[in-house]
Amino acid sequence: MKKYSFVVVLFLMSMVKLATAQEAAAGGKLEWHTSLQEAHELSQTSKKPIFAFFTGSDWCGWCKRLQYDVFSKPEFVAWAQKNVILLELDFPRTKQLPAELAQQNSGMQQALKVTGYPTCWLLFTAKDAATNNFSLNPVGSLGYPSGAEQGKEQVLFLENANRIMGQIKVN
Image (cartoon, rainbow, N blue to C red; front, side, top):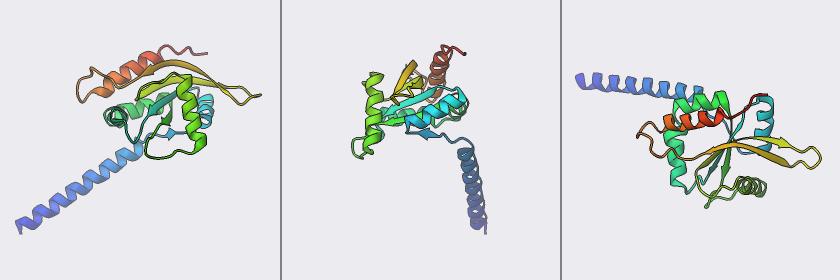
């Protein structure tokens, strides 16, 4: 009888933990955009900078670590939701991106002279109405927070991000 009680209690505890995790995930979900046009429009409306994350989603180990050690943490989620528009610029090796998306990502990579991954840029954009071309106004860049205390990578990353955000002039 005690065995069954233990199993029932264990089952109930795991269900509560699962429900709590699902609530946290629902309330703390990041919205990553892949379209520069969409990110530009949201940035213009909200007056928030774009947080451009250059990644190799299917091959870059440091990109995956950045996502796990920083982007998945509640502190980063809250900061991002409050301060930036998220734009993911992916450079996969095994999956094929649509040609237009690959061209957009490559153009952003060249414009910002990104040579390593992961790289994150905080920037604003402007769009020329006549040509439909974007101009970029980069504020600063970030990478994996090397030298951070293990398990506290998000703290150093956010300190660096806030330092860059402090350089933004409010009009």
